[in-house]
Amino acid sequence: MKAVILAGGFGTRLSEETAVRPKPMVEIGGRPIIWHIMRYYAAYGVQDFVVCCGYKGDIIKDYFLNYGRLASDITVDLASGDVTVHRGANEPWRVTLVDTGLETMTGGRVRRARPYIGDETFCLTYGDGVSDVAIDELIAFHRRSGVLATLTAVQPPGRFGAMTLPKGEDRIAAFQEKPANGDGGDEAWINGGYFVLEPDAIDYIDGDGTVWERDPMERLARQGQLAAFRHRGFWQPMDTLRDKNLLEELWSQRRAPWAVA
Image (cartoon, rainbow, N blue to C red; front, top):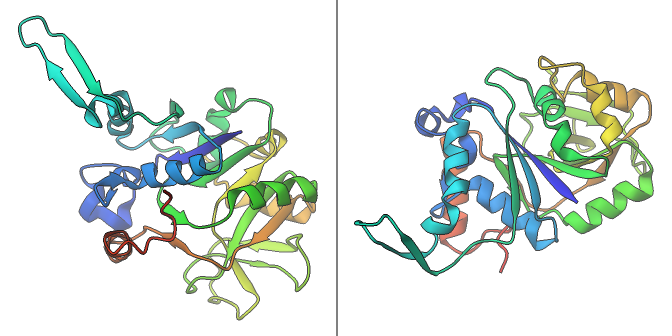
């Protein structure tokens, strides 16, 4: 199975870092957060990645092009230009880096990456947040649900969008990104990303200007094609410098819930 990672946004709320690099390349514990996300998926056997690049995408491409050499001991013969890698540290990943445009919205990025996604069920997530969601259980839940799209529903402090998810039900009755009325109480769940999608879900995306979290997800919900996998564990986006510092503290204290051996 492939995992598609949205990594093309400007990251304006983390401008202290994103002025010089794309947000997925902001480091936690000396590694870009996208590396943490990919390593977590890989722990569940998902090792084929499609990265949707945009803002400063060349930095992401350079990172993976030079990953092996940067993570290994090397000898460089300056006269001949030959490079010998003594101790390799490559991950067993396949990474496809797709230029999905500078101004393209989230849905448009997925649509542009479709030729690289194929015709099978795939994962989709954001390149700026980590969680300890059980990926295998999420995928199994999606397959049982028989829908085109499944998202991971979480309940963090309310500054995000909410959905109507009746008690005891897995089908989403309504979806609204970032509603004005706050978190909506105990049964208000938010979109935590970590999607599992069928390729036909991409047909709900009209073009570059389509925001995945708006019309496509709203239509999927109305048609009973959007399910929610409830996750009550750890979930943390990296939207601000405060968020970054929190993740850095968890990692440095070896208390990072998303860390894998």
